[in-house]
Image 1 (cartoon, rainbow, N blue to C red):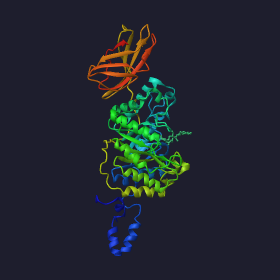
Image 2 (image 1 turned 90 degrees about the horizontal axis):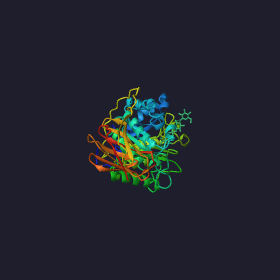
Image 3 (image 1 turned 135 degrees about the horizontal axis):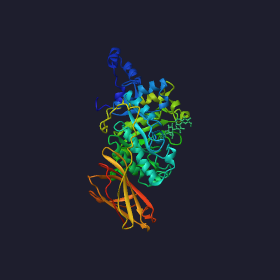
Length: 478
Ligand code: G3I
């Protein structure tokens, strides 16, 4: 492709024999007439193939309950090359009872996608909504542990198979740019980075995304709040690879021409940007084209997903916000296809982790190994004791919980120390403050859990790299 040609040049450039036809006509006016009437199928004739020309994907949300609808599957199989399970990989679907994972419907969507040559985005691992009842009733360190266990369980099942995970969904407040109050937020402000660190250890091949709505308009406080979090994560080495802009546009949250600034600003932090749940009230062709062109303008905007196939499949079906009506392509479809076809190759696409698109077996073993309660216990000479147990383990990593217990008088500040036997390293720690170096670990209480009444306990936890170990612990009071 001519690198000097503008996208408009490429769109206008006659293809597939049009040069010969125009030459035969030999009339300039006829050429003009032909070039202005270039149809939507100037280059590729499906959304996925058109997006692939610039190294991007074009995806859709898929609902397991609709896989028996042949109009739905025919369109979806033909048009899209990335799939997100609309509800089937969420927390209530995948862990309906604590520690009992269920991947029946998630696998139906996953297997349909892979059998039809598509990659899969995972949605979502930690979210204040669609939590099963048991999780809704948890708080504090029990909820924190449950979140970690959930991430490990789901990511182990799909390990190596998911292009990108929405690790954390919708954690910011709509109004002020701060965090949304939720049971997860109340476990401590570090819950998001703990989720990302846990996710990286669980499946290093998956891109890890933060996903939210109303972060599309660059001037909104919520956009700035998420931007500052991503900037902070990148500065501190918290593993994050991408930001998902849900992009549900409607009269209350309309598309704004600063959307391109939002995309390029996030990308400049060193993360990919993915448009993850696009729908537009009324499906204006112009607005759809603007969204696509804004993504195409930023090399690290590497894919677009619409939140459903036909208007009738939309969570906001009354808004008719999608690209198909029944089996018919809408004008917005042509606008999107034309915009994708007009793009040149993406000059600096971000590396795509390898995917192994093998169907998931229908029967899934429990991804959570049995708890190993082999505690290393310290005595209570100084007034406290500490015991360690392995909560979860997986190849190359593990998760532990340490229980700190006051003796027969209360404790106001504690320190637990130990020596790793085999080069283990902590990847994330919660409910405590980590110090020490090399194999010599020292963990002090967090500001909020230093005081323990006589005979009472508190816990801290961590994920670590290496083989699970239960070293002897020493507990000292402040
Ligand atoms: O499947 C049951 C059905 O058996 C029951 O009769 C019916 C009665 O209400 O409910 C059905 O479940 C519904 C489910 O969608 C499947 O249709 C739930 O009630 C309903 O709450 C659920 O809504 C989903 C919503 O997330 C929940 O938060 C939407 O389908 C889904 O499109 C939507 O997706 C979210 C993204 O995950 C995150 N971003 C926003 C986006 C839109 O809300």
